[in-house]
Amino acid sequence: MKKNDTTLMSPSEWEVMRVIWTTGGASSKEVISLIQAKSTWSESTIKTLLRRLVEKKMLSTIKEGRRFFYRPTITEAAAMDKVVSDLFDHLCSMKKGGVILKLLSELTLSRSDIEQMQQLLSQKIKTAPVAIACDCLSNDRNCDQKKSC
Amino acid sequence: MKKNDTTLMSPSEWEVMRVIWTTGGASSKEVISLIQAKSTWSESTIKTLLRRLVEKKMLSTIKEGRRFFYRPTITEAAAMDKVVSDLFDHLCSMKKGGVILKLLSELTLSRSDIEQMQQLLSQKIKTAPVAIACDCLSNDRNCDQKKSC
DNA sequence: CATTTACGTTGACAAGTGTAAACGTAAGTT
DNA sequence: AACTTACGTTTACACTTGTCAACGTAAATG
Image 1 (tube, rainbow over the protein chains, first blue to last red):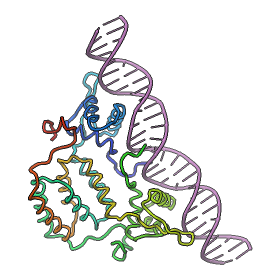
Image 2: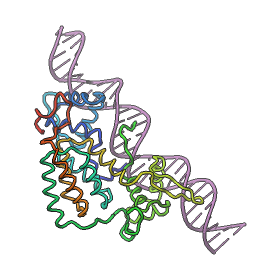
Image 3: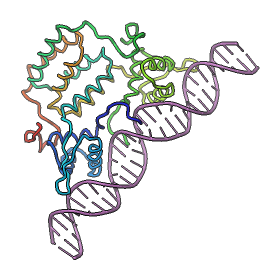
Image 4: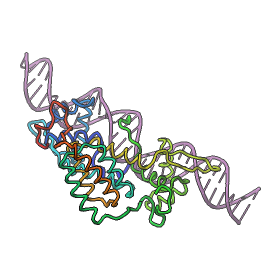
């Protein structure tokens, strides 16, 4: 398949990372029991995912006797920023604002998150353009003439 | 692979949809030339993607003579909302706010988008909790006791 | 009408993913 | 020491995705 984009990890692998990010590091035993508390994945499956994450360098291992202790090589915040940016990079620029608005309306945000957003937005609005152009087609045929834009 | 989650379409397929959403519908010829104006995909590749999108019911076809006219079966906004929600559903709840904040800081938003967000946030802050709990581990062992949370 | 063109259909194939069974062996247990 | 357990390693396999080439035939063109 020749892996075109910079995929960090698959969705299943992501779930494994979540527990390791949250614990700060763990043995396969811990990962397995924590994951199994929320899913039906077999031990084998989780071991495979751990192995693949090590292959992808998302986890580093420290040998403790003959067991391994797995620890993340990226922070959760960095990984989250990356997957979210990668996704947004492929969305129509004109419509990103609307998508975020929808997201904001559906999420429960903390008071502090909201305050920071308000702060940021009040700065951004000072220089915000009236409209954002669609970038779904090539330049010479952009969406000013198109139906859905 | 037994398709666990509700994946709408692959990244490549998404790019094809973008042109069809933007044009409102198109023949394979149009799709091919519009896509090729921005990528190096072969005609064959694009035809395969169109076919798979039809199989997945993301596109419907109307026969015009022996050619097909492809039109989207979902709106771009709906598809965007779905992929974004699906992604956020797997991110640590505690950190979603921070991710959106980062996103907002990096995007160029229109004045109107910003105003709507400000409006929404000023409503939400009235009932916003002080903090959001991490949901990366199972309940009985949640992150109040964990390092990274 | 013969030829070229256009476009849908088939077939292909390697890499990634979801999901797991089986195996080997160091360690702990009896 | 024999037995059981735990945990890493190997092997497996079907489905998805990225990428195309080749084929067949209706249509357009000369």
